[in-house]
Image (tube, rainbow, N blue to C red; front, side):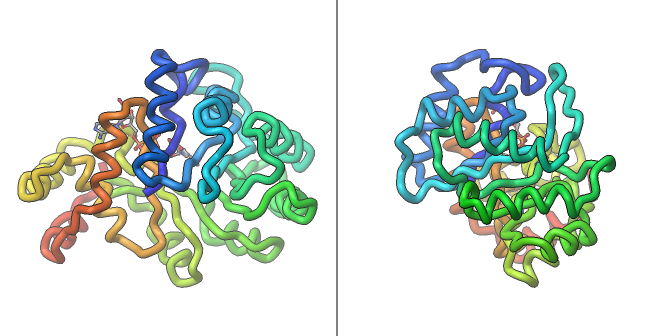
Length: 267
Ligand SMILES: NC(=O)c1ccc[n+]([C@@H]2O[C@H](COP(=O)([O-])OP(=O)(O)OC[C@H]3O[C@@H](n4cnc5c(N)ncnc54)[C@H](OP(=O)(O)O)[C@@H]3O)[C@@H](O)[C@H]2O)c1
């Protein structure tokens, strides 16, 4: 189980958090709970989430992987125009290195595919950053199988981050490709951004009652059981929710329960 930092910013993923002290406590608690992968992006805030990570956790524990991303600009709350031109990716990476106080980023993820830029050129920038030693591993986000193949023809790709959850299965085939080839898969919106829909909530609540758990914990346990390569990165701004989410990693669902949850249709 990892942690996603998108919820540590203000409304619309814009500006500072409403409760800065709680945001810092969430990040510190991640380490105490044994989380060693924290997902972020230069665009969260923008810059707010990366700055909070450095403020709360630098100098970092040796085994902590900070996975950041570049490729989205911010023009206002809730606005995320894409810009994955090579020169922009390189400038974004420099900014992340500076804010995170790192000499090398363990996992640098291309945040999207930009219809105005050939994907080969975007991935080429990541390959150059890797060759220069500024990033250790390359990950990609919001891709289909064809983009995954293009990227892997240019550089080693270690992970994919796509929207996927018990109520959003459209990336199933990409997940299976990652599983077959041993790439990590980080499902974003693992909790449906806090709203799993009525039908799913009822099915999840039924299983949750048996485990004395919450529907969100069951959604996470389902993801962990779904494939050995899934690495959920649930986001929260609250220590209590973080603790609840991490505890989901020890819930073992039975085959019958998994089959029942598999039947949930998209929200
Ligand atoms: N690559 C991409 O394009 C992309 C896109 C979106 C997200 N992401 C990444 O994926 C991560 C996860 O996505 P997300 O944070 O947007 O959505 P999410 O994890 O599906 O849901 C987060 C929402 O659920 C609430 N929540 C969390 N734990 C809860 C609990 N135990 N009980 C009740 N409510 C709970 C949070 O509110 P509270 O703050 O009140 O807990 C928050 O509003 C992000 O943080 C980000 O790192 C990547």
